[in-house]
Image (cartoon, rainbow, N blue to C red; front, side, top):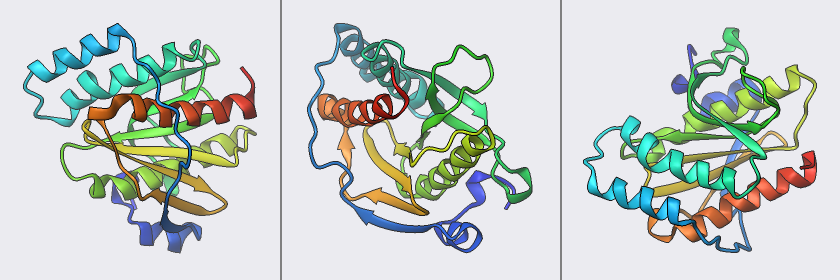
Length: 204
């Protein structure tokens, strides 16, 4: 393996003994009211030709992440397009579309990393093994700095469709339910639940 994008779920199982399964991740979701700012940002995105992963990242994904950050008093920071090198010898390296980490004010990637988000143009299935590898990389990156989290979350999105993943106890769980931009309040509710978990673990 030379980078995160080269991994398959089978390769993660063989190299790191990490199994993958499908299950419902979130039983209770409380929809989150969105701000006028996000409403306007998404309306602007609707008016523009969005043809690339970069455009989806900039016009849809980033505004949603900023909204989540604003609603949580800047509990976490967002890295866009940063290079995450967890273990170069094992191919756990490469660019991540978005890395969410506890905001410590550092210029370099803060720790602990709590979630990675991978944006894809169309086929989310292609992004699942890549995101899973990034989650493994994030876990190792945290451990190297003495920060061991029981869970690391990930998400693959086309901007319109969102599918979440969780790494826990050497198992990647892929959510059987997808979430949609058309119900952004529910989508934000899922993401808020993840942030609330980390607030409980890490403190405000």
